[in-house]
Length: 370
Image (cartoon, rainbow, N blue to C red; front, top):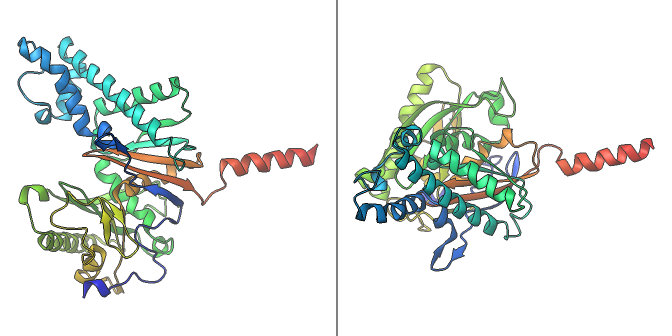
């Protein structure tokens, strides 16, 4: 039975606090704000609502420069074109929405910093689909300026990888180091409220041991929200997607590791069940009897000549992990992902000497010299 499958020794536990390169200090914090959650004030939907509110008085007079389409139907690329287009009024309206959203986002981040776990964060990486647009980049940059002007010492930067690939690449950092010595790629799964994306991720370990050269060789996307599958149907489709990727990788000559990393919404328990936060997925994924990692290991028992190991973590954590190679100048850093909600995770680097250690060691060396 699926619930009897356990994680192999030497691989780790699902939703782990301690990973090969970082300690996960916290993830998926849900801070209440009035009748709702704080993160809802800095989501994709929040930006759309801000823009719609700005349009309301203009619509009454027939002067809405964005036309008749609701914000939900205006693509990110269309908004980006407006910013550089000849319609000054339309560009001004979008800039206005960016400014109001940045003010809200800054407020949300300040509230996060009142949480003891977040208070000494030095850098925040912003991911999620909203980041992958000029509108998103401007909103992030403006928020950074607001925070600094109000005395909060934190750097706010866009995630480096494309948001569609960051969750897959982040799964590499769930794997134990011995995986990279014998294999050049892994299977990764990124589960969202609307889509499931699977991919073959090249480690790039021979080029760079810190995994900074990792790339997605091939991926497959299923928009499950369009099909409205059952939970069991979704798992079967996911297994087929992974089996197809295994065949493609073997045909291409990859040394595919017997490992599958999963990025999934919600609070992930050590046994692979989901405690909460998976309400947007098809069916009841929060049942104590449902164990996705175990079902995948059951559906794909071996990869190559070895038993398949599966590890799952929160999707915000996975996106953040893709930034590990680029966050080494900081001791403590976090990730916020702007999407349907606001994913969040906070990390402490532990593999390399921290800035505090370097300062202390430098002081000791200077004292000894004097």
